Length: 151
Image 1 (tube, one colour):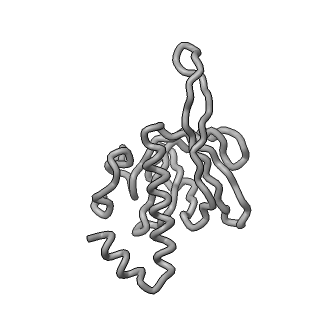
Image 2 (cartoon, rainbow, N blue to C red):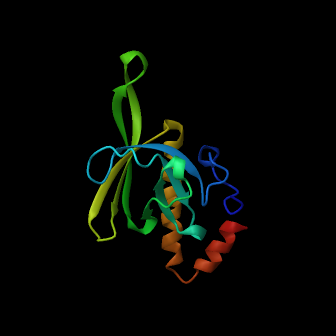
């Protein structure tokens, strides 16, 4: 965690022993096949120094690799509003994150992730920041940019 000292409070790890970056509890409403996925229930945001990717893992097996999406393969992220049943059966508005990306075979895929509403904006901001850093790494002045981000 020392390599991400300025991480927004909402993205600080909920598991201090996590192998990489921040870990956020999630619910996968729509997986690659369009069905809910109960296998993965946490999202790791791996910084550029540790792979620059999003990784879905199982909380009970946090040290076992899960499904990884390299940030360079993310085509878009969009916050959507859905309605779900809240307590006592009342309808409740909920924010979810749609992520479109290219899989290992370069086919476009889509997943919908339910993240705590307070964490959704910081998650999207972190993904966008990672994409910008990756774009910067393709230029000659990457080393200059990277040292200024760390210091």
